[in-house]
Image: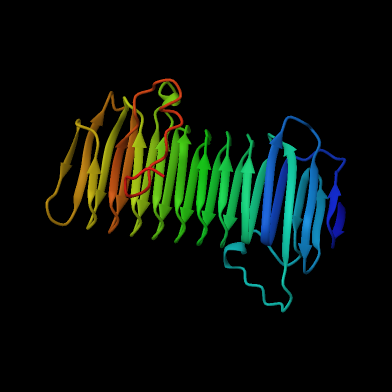
Length: 290
Protein backbone atom coordinates (compact mmCIF):
# COMPACT_ATOMS: atom_id res chain seq x y z
CA UNK A 1 0.00 0.00 0.00
CA UNK A 2 1.13 3.54 -0.83
CA UNK A 3 -0.04 6.35 1.44
CA UNK A 4 0.24 10.15 1.57
CA UNK A 5 -0.80 12.41 4.47
CA UNK A 6 -1.99 15.71 3.00
CA UNK A 7 -1.93 18.77 5.28
CA UNK A 8 -1.58 21.54 2.68
CA UNK A 9 -2.58 22.14 -0.95
CA UNK A 10 -0.86 19.58 -3.15
CA UNK A 11 -1.02 17.60 -6.40
CA UNK A 12 -0.47 13.86 -6.61
CA UNK A 13 -0.12 11.50 -9.57
CA UNK A 14 -0.31 7.84 -8.45
CA UNK A 15 1.79 5.68 -10.74
CA UNK A 16 -0.16 2.42 -10.51
CA UNK A 17 -3.42 1.80 -12.45
CA UNK A 18 -6.70 2.63 -10.68
CA UNK A 19 -10.04 0.85 -11.25
CA UNK A 20 -11.85 2.09 -8.14
CA UNK A 21 -11.93 5.55 -6.56
CA UNK A 22 -13.22 6.39 -3.09
CA UNK A 23 -13.47 10.00 -1.88
CA UNK A 24 -14.92 11.04 1.49
CA UNK A 25 -14.68 14.58 2.86
CA UNK A 26 -16.33 16.98 5.31
CA UNK A 27 -17.25 20.48 4.08
CA UNK A 28 -15.78 21.97 0.92
CA UNK A 29 -16.20 20.28 -2.47
CA UNK A 30 -15.39 17.16 -4.50
CA UNK A 31 -15.04 17.14 -8.29
CA UNK A 32 -14.47 13.82 -10.04
CA UNK A 33 -14.11 13.78 -13.83
CA UNK A 34 -13.62 10.86 -16.18
CA UNK A 35 -11.05 11.23 -18.95
CA UNK A 36 -9.72 9.26 -21.92
CA UNK A 37 -6.30 9.03 -20.26
CA UNK A 38 -5.03 6.06 -18.28
CA UNK A 39 -3.36 8.21 -15.63
CA UNK A 40 -4.87 9.55 -12.40
CA UNK A 41 -4.42 13.05 -11.01
CA UNK A 42 -5.40 14.20 -7.53
CA UNK A 43 -5.41 17.84 -6.50
CA UNK A 44 -6.19 19.10 -3.01
CA UNK A 45 -6.52 22.86 -3.53
CA UNK A 46 -7.82 23.73 -0.05
CA UNK A 47 -7.54 21.93 3.27
CA UNK A 48 -8.29 22.89 6.85
CA UNK A 49 -8.27 20.72 9.96
CA UNK A 50 -6.92 17.16 10.19
CA UNK A 51 -4.92 15.70 7.30
CA UNK A 52 -6.51 13.93 4.38
CA UNK A 53 -5.15 10.44 3.85
CA UNK A 54 -4.59 9.52 0.20
CA UNK A 55 -3.85 5.82 -0.14
CA UNK A 56 -3.62 3.24 -2.91
CA UNK A 57 -4.22 -0.41 -2.12
CA UNK A 58 -3.92 -2.45 -5.29
CA UNK A 59 -6.11 -0.71 -7.87
CA UNK A 60 -8.23 1.13 -5.27
CA UNK A 61 -7.43 4.79 -4.61
CA UNK A 62 -8.92 6.37 -1.47
CA UNK A 63 -9.03 10.01 -0.38
CA UNK A 64 -10.52 10.39 3.10
CA UNK A 65 -10.06 11.10 6.79
CA UNK A 66 -9.08 8.32 9.15
CA UNK A 67 -12.37 8.63 11.07
CA UNK A 68 -14.79 8.95 8.13
CA UNK A 69 -16.05 5.61 6.84
CA UNK A 70 -18.33 4.78 3.91
CA UNK A 71 -20.89 2.67 5.78
CA UNK A 72 -21.55 5.27 8.48
CA UNK A 73 -21.28 8.47 6.42
CA UNK A 74 -25.01 9.27 6.41
CA UNK A 75 -25.00 9.20 10.24
CA UNK A 76 -21.56 10.74 10.75
CA UNK A 77 -21.05 13.42 13.41
CA UNK A 78 -17.80 15.29 14.02
CA UNK A 79 -17.23 15.15 17.73
CA UNK A 80 -13.89 16.90 17.53
CA UNK A 81 -13.50 20.58 18.33
CA UNK A 82 -11.52 21.46 15.22
CA UNK A 83 -13.12 22.56 12.00
CA UNK A 84 -12.37 20.63 8.82
CA UNK A 85 -12.75 21.52 5.18
CA UNK A 86 -11.24 20.30 1.90
CA UNK A 87 -11.57 20.95 -1.82
CA UNK A 88 -10.56 17.88 -3.84
CA UNK A 89 -10.44 17.33 -7.62
CA UNK A 90 -9.68 13.93 -9.13
CA UNK A 91 -9.25 13.02 -12.81
CA UNK A 92 -9.57 9.29 -13.50
CA UNK A 93 -10.03 6.97 -16.49
CA UNK A 94 -13.71 7.05 -17.48
CA UNK A 95 -14.26 3.34 -16.75
CA UNK A 96 -13.31 3.59 -13.07
CA UNK A 97 -15.92 2.78 -10.38
CA UNK A 98 -16.49 5.85 -8.22
CA UNK A 99 -17.72 6.19 -4.62
CA UNK A 100 -18.11 9.70 -3.19
CA UNK A 101 -19.24 10.46 0.35
CA UNK A 102 -19.72 14.03 1.54
CA UNK A 103 -20.81 15.72 4.77
CA UNK A 104 -21.67 19.38 4.21
CA UNK A 105 -19.81 19.42 0.90
CA UNK A 106 -20.82 19.76 -2.74
CA UNK A 107 -20.08 16.86 -5.08
CA UNK A 108 -19.80 16.82 -8.87
CA UNK A 109 -19.18 13.60 -10.82
CA UNK A 110 -18.93 13.76 -14.62
CA UNK A 111 -17.91 11.62 -17.58
CA UNK A 112 -17.83 8.25 -15.76
CA UNK A 113 -18.84 5.03 -17.56
CA UNK A 114 -18.19 2.77 -14.57
CA UNK A 115 -20.42 2.44 -11.51
CA UNK A 116 -21.07 5.67 -9.58
CA UNK A 117 -22.32 5.85 -6.01
CA UNK A 118 -22.73 9.08 -4.04
CA UNK A 119 -23.81 9.53 -0.42
CA UNK A 120 -24.32 12.95 1.12
CA UNK A 121 -25.62 14.40 4.37
CA UNK A 122 -25.89 18.04 3.31
CA UNK A 123 -24.56 19.76 0.22
CA UNK A 124 -25.78 19.40 -3.35
CA UNK A 125 -24.78 16.59 -5.71
CA UNK A 126 -24.49 17.05 -9.49
CA UNK A 127 -24.15 14.09 -11.87
CA UNK A 128 -23.22 14.82 -15.49
CA UNK A 129 -22.96 12.51 -18.53
CA UNK A 130 -22.71 9.24 -16.60
CA UNK A 131 -23.24 6.09 -18.67
CA UNK A 132 -22.78 3.45 -15.98
CA UNK A 133 -25.23 2.52 -13.19
CA UNK A 134 -25.76 5.37 -10.71
CA UNK A 135 -26.90 5.31 -7.07
CA UNK A 136 -27.28 8.62 -5.19
CA UNK A 137 -28.43 9.11 -1.60
CA UNK A 138 -28.92 12.39 0.25
CA UNK A 139 -30.35 13.51 3.57
CA UNK A 140 -30.97 17.21 2.88
CA UNK A 141 -28.89 18.12 -0.17
CA UNK A 142 -30.37 18.41 -3.65
CA UNK A 143 -29.59 15.78 -6.31
CA UNK A 144 -29.34 16.78 -9.98
CA UNK A 145 -28.63 14.37 -12.84
CA UNK A 146 -28.11 15.71 -16.35
CA UNK A 147 -27.67 13.64 -19.52
CA UNK A 148 -27.30 10.44 -17.49
CA UNK A 149 -27.73 7.34 -19.67
CA UNK A 150 -27.02 4.71 -17.02
CA UNK A 151 -29.72 3.27 -14.74
CA UNK A 152 -30.36 5.90 -12.05
CA UNK A 153 -31.46 5.22 -8.46
CA UNK A 154 -31.91 8.27 -6.21
CA UNK A 155 -33.05 8.58 -2.59
CA UNK A 156 -33.50 11.81 -0.65
CA UNK A 157 -35.16 12.83 2.60
CA UNK A 158 -35.73 16.60 2.25
CA UNK A 159 -33.59 17.42 -0.80
CA UNK A 160 -35.04 17.80 -4.31
CA UNK A 161 -34.30 15.31 -7.11
CA UNK A 162 -33.97 16.75 -10.63
CA UNK A 163 -33.32 14.76 -13.81
CA UNK A 164 -32.58 16.90 -16.88
CA UNK A 165 -32.47 15.40 -20.38
CA UNK A 166 -32.80 11.96 -18.82
CA UNK A 167 -31.73 9.38 -21.37
CA UNK A 168 -31.47 6.24 -19.27
CA UNK A 169 -33.90 3.34 -19.55
CA UNK A 170 -34.39 3.24 -15.78
CA UNK A 171 -35.04 6.07 -13.30
CA UNK A 172 -36.15 5.21 -9.77
CA UNK A 173 -36.40 7.95 -7.16
CA UNK A 174 -37.80 8.25 -3.65
CA UNK A 175 -38.14 11.29 -1.39
CA UNK A 176 -39.88 12.10 1.85
CA UNK A 177 -40.54 15.84 1.42
CA UNK A 178 -38.26 16.70 -1.48
CA UNK A 179 -39.75 17.62 -4.86
CA UNK A 180 -38.99 15.59 -7.98
CA UNK A 181 -38.61 16.78 -11.57
CA UNK A 182 -37.93 14.26 -14.35
CA UNK A 183 -37.38 15.60 -17.88
CA UNK A 184 -36.95 12.80 -20.43
CA UNK A 185 -34.81 13.26 -23.55
CA UNK A 186 -36.70 12.67 -26.82
CA UNK A 187 -33.46 11.57 -28.49
CA UNK A 188 -33.86 8.20 -26.78
CA UNK A 189 -37.22 7.28 -28.32
CA UNK A 190 -35.65 4.42 -30.26
CA UNK A 191 -33.84 3.05 -27.20
CA UNK A 192 -35.02 0.37 -24.75
CA UNK A 193 -38.41 0.87 -23.03
CA UNK A 194 -38.20 3.36 -20.18
CA UNK A 195 -38.93 2.28 -16.61
CA UNK A 196 -39.67 5.37 -14.50
CA UNK A 197 -40.78 4.88 -10.88
CA UNK A 198 -41.14 7.88 -8.57
CA UNK A 199 -42.38 7.89 -4.97
CA UNK A 200 -42.75 10.73 -2.45
CA UNK A 201 -44.60 11.38 0.78
CA UNK A 202 -45.21 15.14 0.62
CA UNK A 203 -43.02 16.25 -2.28
CA UNK A 204 -44.41 17.46 -5.59
CA UNK A 205 -43.71 15.43 -8.73
CA UNK A 206 -43.38 16.76 -12.30
CA UNK A 207 -42.59 14.56 -15.30
CA UNK A 208 -42.06 15.91 -18.80
CA UNK A 209 -42.41 13.26 -21.49
CA UNK A 210 -41.29 13.35 -25.12
CA UNK A 211 -43.90 13.83 -27.83
CA UNK A 212 -44.89 11.33 -29.01
CA UNK A 213 -44.51 9.32 -25.79
CA UNK A 214 -44.54 5.54 -25.47
CA UNK A 215 -45.47 4.30 -21.99
CA UNK A 216 -48.10 2.83 -19.71
CA UNK A 217 -48.88 5.53 -17.14
CA UNK A 218 -50.08 5.17 -13.58
CA UNK A 219 -49.78 8.26 -11.38
CA UNK A 220 -51.67 9.03 -8.19
CA UNK A 221 -51.80 11.38 -5.22
CA UNK A 222 -53.82 10.88 -2.05
CA UNK A 223 -54.60 14.52 -1.27
CA UNK A 224 -52.68 16.62 -3.81
CA UNK A 225 -53.74 18.01 -7.18
CA UNK A 226 -53.02 16.56 -10.64
CA UNK A 227 -52.23 18.16 -14.01
CA UNK A 228 -52.23 16.26 -17.30
CA UNK A 229 -51.15 17.46 -20.76
CA UNK A 230 -52.01 14.23 -22.66
CA UNK A 231 -55.41 13.67 -24.22
CA UNK A 232 -54.94 9.88 -24.25
CA UNK A 233 -54.68 9.70 -20.46
CA UNK A 234 -57.59 9.62 -18.03
CA UNK A 235 -57.82 11.77 -14.92
CA UNK A 236 -59.89 10.13 -12.20
CA UNK A 237 -61.07 11.06 -8.71
CA UNK A 238 -62.99 14.06 -7.46
CA UNK A 239 -62.35 13.97 -3.73
CA UNK A 240 -59.39 12.44 -1.98
CA UNK A 241 -57.22 10.25 -4.19
CA UNK A 242 -56.70 11.49 -7.75
CA UNK A 243 -55.03 9.52 -10.54
CA UNK A 244 -53.76 9.77 -14.10
CA UNK A 245 -53.82 6.49 -16.00
CA UNK A 246 -53.67 5.19 -19.53
CA UNK A 247 -51.36 4.25 -22.38
CA UNK A 248 -49.30 6.53 -24.59
CA UNK A 249 -48.19 5.18 -27.95
CA UNK A 250 -47.58 1.44 -27.93
CA UNK A 251 -47.07 1.42 -24.15
CA UNK A 252 -43.59 -0.08 -24.31
CA UNK A 253 -42.33 1.82 -21.28
CA UNK A 254 -43.60 2.14 -17.73
CA UNK A 255 -44.24 5.32 -15.74
CA UNK A 256 -45.42 5.03 -12.14
CA UNK A 257 -45.55 8.05 -9.83
CA UNK A 258 -47.02 8.20 -6.34
CA UNK A 259 -47.20 10.93 -3.72
CA UNK A 260 -49.33 11.20 -0.60
CA UNK A 261 -49.92 14.95 -0.23
CA UNK A 262 -47.89 16.45 -3.08
CA UNK A 263 -49.17 17.38 -6.52
CA UNK A 264 -48.40 15.48 -9.75
CA UNK A 265 -47.95 17.10 -13.17
CA UNK A 266 -47.49 15.23 -16.46
CA UNK A 267 -46.13 17.64 -19.04
CA UNK A 268 -45.48 17.31 -22.76
CA UNK A 269 -42.23 18.26 -24.45
CA UNK A 270 -42.70 20.20 -27.67
CA UNK A 271 -42.26 18.17 -30.84
CA UNK A 272 -38.64 17.94 -31.97
CA UNK A 273 -37.77 20.93 -34.14
CA UNK A 274 -34.05 21.51 -34.47
CA UNK A 275 -32.57 22.37 -31.08
CA UNK A 276 -35.73 23.93 -29.68
CA UNK A 277 -37.10 20.80 -27.99
CA UNK A 278 -33.79 19.43 -26.85
CA UNK A 279 -32.75 22.57 -25.01
CA UNK A 280 -36.11 23.85 -23.81
CA UNK A 281 -36.27 24.60 -20.08
CA UNK A 282 -37.02 21.82 -17.61
CA UNK A 283 -40.28 21.98 -15.66
CA UNK A 284 -40.53 22.65 -11.96
CA UNK A 285 -42.58 20.38 -9.73
CA UNK A 286 -45.52 22.74 -10.01
CA UNK A 287 -45.48 22.56 -13.81
CA UNK A 288 -43.70 25.85 -14.44
CA UNK A 289 -40.46 25.88 -16.39
CA UNK A 290 -37.22 26.49 -14.52
